[in-house]
Each structure stands twice: as C-alpha cells, then as structure tokens.
Image: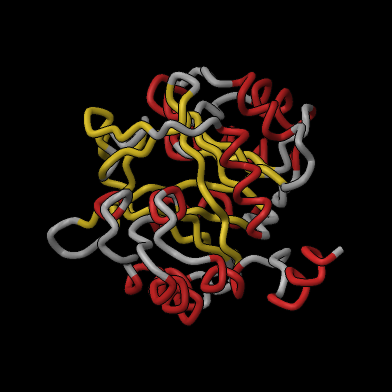
Length: 258
C-alpha cells in the first residue's frame, strides 16, 4: 500500500478541516512548498493536493500554488477541488499535474465525467467520492466540498464509470476526516469486496502507523493522510514501509557520510 500525503489549500495557505466543516479550520504556518519538500524527503512519490475553495465554490482558486507544486517534478501530484470542466482539467494536466481528482461533477454530471475519463485516460482521472454513513450504515455521497447531501450510495455512484475503464477511486469517510479517530476499515473492506478491480485510495481518520498497517491489510492501493503527517504523529521509520522512495537506515547513514 502506498501512502499519499495530503496538502489542503484555502486562500493559498495549508489548512485542515474537522469532519469537512469549513468553520472548523486549523491553519498551519507552513508554506505548501515546504510541506512538499518535507514529504519528498520522507520518500513520498505522490502528493494529494486539494483546492478547498474550489471544492466548495466550483472554481479553481489556488491554481498558481497547485501548478507551482506540480512543477517541482520531485513527486507526482494529484489535484482535486474545482475540477468541473474539461478545460480546467486540460489546463492543469498540461502544466505538470499527473492526475486530477473529480468529485462533485462525477455525481452531478456523470455522463460528462465519463467522457473526460475517455479523453484523458483512466490513469489521469480519479473519482473522489466523499461519504457519510446513514442510519443503516450505507455510505451516502456528499458534494460541493461536503456541504450538500445526496441519496446516492457510493456503490451506485461508481456504476456510470465502469464501462469507460474507471481505475482510481478516492473515498473519504467525512466523519473521520481530520478527527484522528481511526479509518473506517469496514467501509474499505466492503468497497474491495464489491469492486476488487479498482485501485481504492482510503482517506479519513489515520492517526498512527497501526492504522496504516490495518488499511494495508484491507487491500486498498493507497492511503491518503493529512493531519497525522502535518503534526508528525508518525515517525519516519514507521512511514518507511509505505513510501517507495524512503531511504533505508543504512542508505541514510551512507548519504550523511558522503
């Protein structure tokens, strides 16, 4: 399982929300590029960068910062938030972004998003389906930066994209996001049971290395983590198994000696 560090942007700054609430924001006094360098040094090969303003309002608001991160080339960047037209997607992909993450549009205009997947390729378009569990435990999708609910289940939301080669799905349990309460292992186990052919990215709740190991056992392809990494709650040694470019202790010592 791959660990993908997350950087959430609002008004150009690094922030985290608590359970998707825009009124429960924690701002971190770290520049986005500073975070990229920290995660690159740990061995990250991918970053997940979200334009929260774009997710809420539908208009890419942190374009300059996103493209500056993508231009670093030291890691590949997948970008979400405000990806609601083919023009915006083409723009960011042509400026170094490796993969776009499409959320609200996948629910509101699935036919159009299916065309994007065909046009740009399934490796370059990841669906982001953010869910809240209802009283029966069914994952219902929310949109517009998690501010609007739907009656659509996660399972039904995927159906229009299977015929066009859907490959990557990022699923966030909103009630776990930023809460450091542990990931929803049952949700991802169910997801893998229903759609084992998909590359699932699990998001929300990671607090320690044990959570990463538990997610790996479910079979998900990747875990996306923001707050636990921002606050350095997991040591570099504990992260190493999940970061493909991480140096071994011996290699680190050799690098220091040289």
